[in-house]
Length: 429
Ligand SMILES: [Zn+2]
Ligand SMILES: [Zn+2]
Image 1: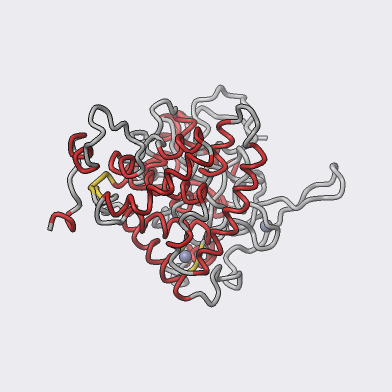
Image 2: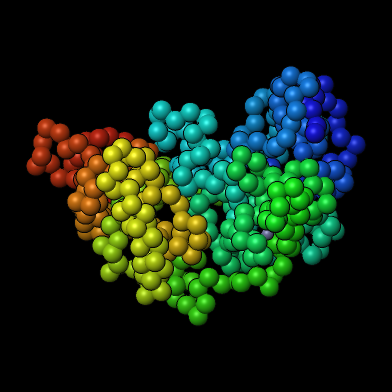
């Protein structure tokens, strides 16, 4: 069991590795450990990622918080030992994506949220990652990728990312062999952290065993095999096109050179906040389903949402009359889907509602959901449509703002009066 070393005294490693484009910290650690022929836990300690812990502290797992951000001591030690620049280290982390992705943003999340609760924010995957088998297979022309595998991308930890457009396929969440999470586990960024035998693109879940005493072997499935089920929407060309075009739009918003502002219900709002709007609308679609069913882009996508909503409604009915349990009730509808095809279906619809040219048109889709949500459960419905971090124009479209002194004011007057909002250009023109 490795012990913490003084992170400030660590010397550079004899050999390091250049990060790949878009790579995550966990993926980088796996590839570097593989290159050096050591286990990930030893590398975690050797590169100072344990931070300023007293010497002699036993280290048994890799903190999941590392995927998001590093404290100053860890950051400096990791940069020095791996010989990566500060910019390169920052690019491995998920927290910096918060400038474009609201569920990670400090500015647009609940003001009471602390650093830790951000890591467990719904719509950010804190202890698991999705993956694209073909991305993991790596670039055939690169010797280093053929040896250590391709990049585990950091954006795969964002729930709004459900497909790899480079390879035209949905991401996978679980191992095709054992059905478990493929890389991490609860409270452990890298499962089996002392296992130095596994390749970076092998499944790190442990196989179940008959007796407690037996050593649990790793699943070890090759996640880069391209013969895994490719298509979650077989023979549904129109559905695929619809959701892949939504994904292209969302990825463009997340790109480092993406727009700072985007139209939500016809008004320009910060890009990061748009993802909070999407999440809120997706949540309302689930809670009030089949209210929005007539607006589904295709019958296939409607059926996918039928199935998902049915499960959520059942879970909600089980706790509806339980006194308290308020957070649990809310989370049943807020939790991101586990199946990327469901995420695709609900985000395609939410994105389309929010792309309405103005708040009146948007209200045509959104007001019935807001009304129905409150009718289903007043307190939960109200909490969902007033979710902190959503934009003011969306709140007006959901009738969730406080109309205040003038109940006869139009939505446009209210949004304008609130200040700072401009019409999206297509509407101004
Ligand atoms: Zn890919
Ligand atoms: Zn597996």
